[in-house]
Image (cartoon, one colour):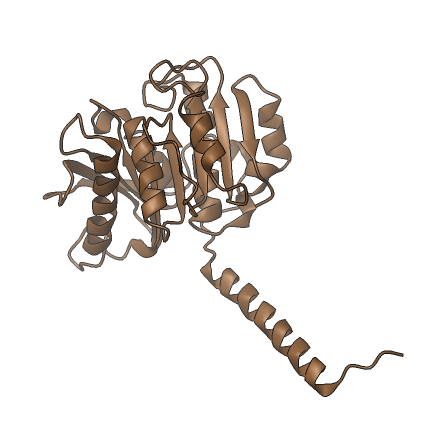
Length: 295
């Protein structure tokens, strides 16, 4: 018979308590908002009423609109940035959609229409910083709505490249979602932020072989990462002008990714790795999907 000595028992107890403490810590960090998600609930506007307000004096970026749930508090904050020669109009459809599912969202316009991805990265981080500070102001219309420890970035085209740069340079971010990303740098091996890349298979501005695929391949294999390529779609397949069915799919996966990694809500894992996800892969909207499930 094997016997556990007191010293061994003590070490085992310490390990057990450590694991328990970690589990409790992770549970405390997770935030669940709303009823259990379903395929139908993720393909439409969420259950929360939403209001919006313009940022009166943007600090470090060109313009900003904040979308926020009218009830509740301490939501994760997401910045969404447009691409080359685009304004907020290109990506502002994501503002009310994401907010209705339990996020505060700031869609921004850049200082100039021609800003490169590195500059866009700085501007999206500036927007996160300012909106977090405004939320801490009692007179703000969205006072108390933002949890400054749960921040994420999204962006289209050069804004997508900017979101990769922001994720690389700001490891405390909880998630990044580059949309049809464009960037001359192809090495993102330093990124530790969970990253979902959405690309468009017919993109001639940021061809997937030279951009999205290379970005994904450069990410560390152990990183929580995924690459979703939309079928029969051009560079603007993630914008407000995209085909409604494609926008619905982009919205569903964006919500699920943010919920899983910004909120720590594992109720959304099946929509990224489980049976609902497999059903999407059997449809007609996604041409390629790569991941390192489970998460």
